[in-house]
Length: 146
Image 1 (cartoon, helix red, strand yellow):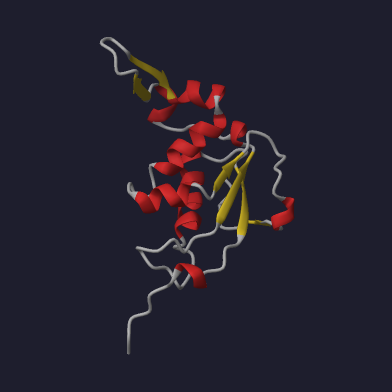
Image 2 (cartoon, helix red, strand yellow):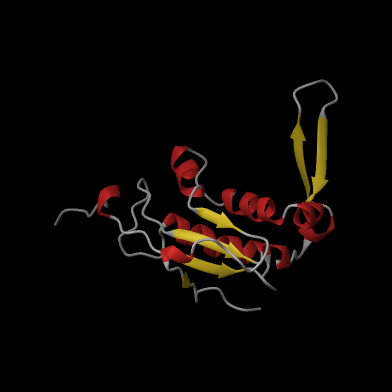
C-alpha cells in the first residue's frame, strides 16, 4: 500500500470563524494554527498547505494570562545604532489587537516559505464584524470556552 500524499490542487478550503472574546490568546492561537496548517483533517501532509481559512473576530477582547500579562517584551530594531525599541505584549494587545493575535499565531507555524503561505489565510478583526460573509464561514466548535 502506498503512502498517501495530498496535492495542493486536490484540497478543498473551508472558512472557519473563531471568536476571541474571553479566550486566552495562546489557546486561541493554538486552535487557529491547527486549522491553518490542516492538522484537523485526515489528509494532513506536512509539506503541503492542506489547511483552511480562519477568521478571528473580537481580537480586542482576547486576554493575556501568566507571564505574558506582566512584561513579555516584543523587540524591533531600526538598523541604526541605538535603534532598538520594544513594547510589552499587553501594550500591543491594547494598541493593535489584530497584529498581536497574528504575531502569536505566526510563531506557531513553520518558519519557512510554507509558513509564509499559510499565514496569508488568517484574517483577524478587532470587532465582531468581518467582510467574509460571501465565503459562508462556519463557527469553529473546537475551541473550549474558559
